[in-house]
Image (tube, rainbow over all chains, first blue to last red; front, side, top):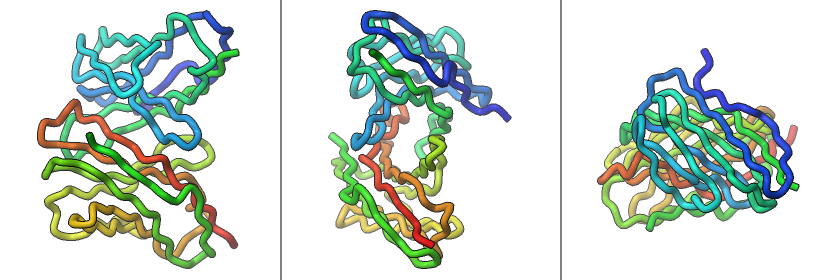
Length: 113
Length: 117
């Protein structure tokens, strides 16, 4: 009963390093999302995808790239990490129904030194 | 643009009492959905309750109910008979549905609820 799985759970990077966060869902959902959570700011949408091969920008896309090569996977990349990208990252998926909730992964805590 | 506002950064409630967490929203659309999520200290996001803008009755799920006042654009979460396990961060979120817009949710800043024994 995996649902939405994020890897890695924790990562420490130095400024300028690159990394990729992987999100995998086993619910056959069309829609997938990457959010970041910062204290006092709730969750803010970085990028999202409405189906395999599609991506779109959210509220805070700068400094991030994404890819959705397979329906079940949604990758979030940081090409040159900055301290401002220190955050908790959440992946979510959904059926795309107007009334449907999003299902979230457990989060990935990223620290950029 | 749509916006969600939660004006209570933190709240305390005595165990077994009811508590209301405030949420106001702003949208120009007539069709939208409102959601509440719970985030315990372990970090996961747990879906609690949903209210559609055309639903005539307030949504209820066990001890959770949503006090939906459309004219005032508010969607407050009411937790009855609070339990120690209700201590968590609570997020209100909205989805505009008229054009779907990718099904994304816009979140408020959150309210941290602490239940006192």
